[in-house]
Image (cartoon, rainbow, N blue to C red; front, side):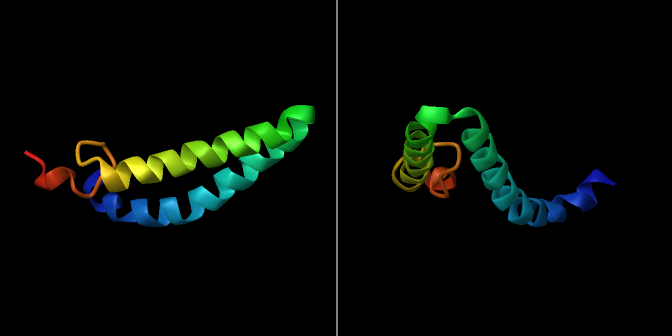
Length: 70
């Protein structure tokens, strides 16, 4: 049964990413106070760092080049 559910991972990601971003924004707005801007910048920096790592470092876990690195 789980083998057949693997194809649902794409739909899960499609819906999870915007929902998680909205929940994160609500948490920052609720608990952030004067640090809300710093939290947003930090999250932007972390997200950009993951994208850069995935694109530039072939040994990074999320990199599409990982399968070609020996």
